[in-house]
Length: 492
Ligand code: GLN
Image (cartoon, rainbow, N blue to C red; front, side, top):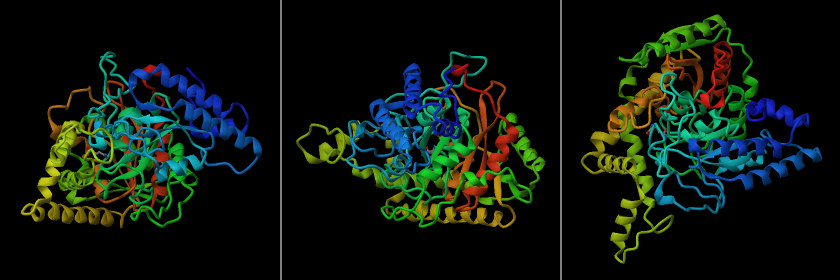
């Protein structure tokens, strides 16, 4: 096993500080791993030259004794939804093939200013629409984990940020960015046995992040420990005047919140999350999680979120509505490939017909339908009202508790192709993650156990708006007690 790629960010920062190794060595070790495991297709674009250049600059900076960044010299992967200056940014769509932005997203700018090194751009579901990373134009990403009984079967890494999750899990980077609109960080984190956080909507700037559903999209991150997530989020977050929904709030020291002390805290257990047909092992893990919190001195109470039942339907009206509007800009004029047609309308139509995949087209059609006159009130306005009720449910629950504990996803990783013919079944993956997204709340998934096939299962901690600190604190306690040490087969 490569000892440098096995480190957490926290430990690697110590090693860099104590001159046990350089950022160039740390970065090269990850580039070697990327090469070795390129059959996971975690990256769409690899940028080893940029990485080594940044790593060298970082080593020089450390040498001068000047002030250094939170992630000084740490190699990360970037989801291919973040615009990166002069580096191809595709959103996994054919319609953006070859697009090299002339600007850098605020989140990646913040990361680079904090010393992060970029190894490449990771694969994802097209325009972040999906739960499996099987809708990418550039091919499927493979989960590094396998079922005990069927070591030859490729499993999905979850989605939409499946490339980032697979890369972190397989040690092809130390951490990665993701975006979460309805679960795209938490669900793949759960499927790949790592932790990931979606902060409060407005905590991280969306500027330079390719838009899917603007009122839901939120950048966040993945890593192999709760503390590493705290460090990455700290480096990414902050107010940005270029995003009108970015909050002008100070960013707390997230890592400092992980102090192991949850005595006196009350954790809510939402009874509506006990859905029919939930696998026994997930129910058991949830109960185990509640017990761990008890053991650590917290009180747990049952809470009710009565509108949970409507969350998926609400999400699958609002998200497609916003996507149909956001994706109107891809017309062959401004970005990517253009169909060779002399008639302007034909050019638009054929460019879009060739450029978008089936799932994106399905969503544009649903979105256009629910926004059309006559249906707007019945679907879109109604969904907005239900969304408000879902938020109110959470706020009421938070009158009696400080955070919530739930499972992250209703299953472990499934096989490639398994839910493919049934979009509704695929949408059910988001049943536990979508409600917090609609309410704009912070949510974190962390690995807490395995199913009978040895596949990782995650627990989710949901917090009050702007209270990522409690989320990290509670997650830190669970991480300690769960002591999740299983690793994907390819690393053994
Ligand atoms: N799986 C959900 C969807 O398909 C969520 C995606 C996301 O969070 N970007 O829309």
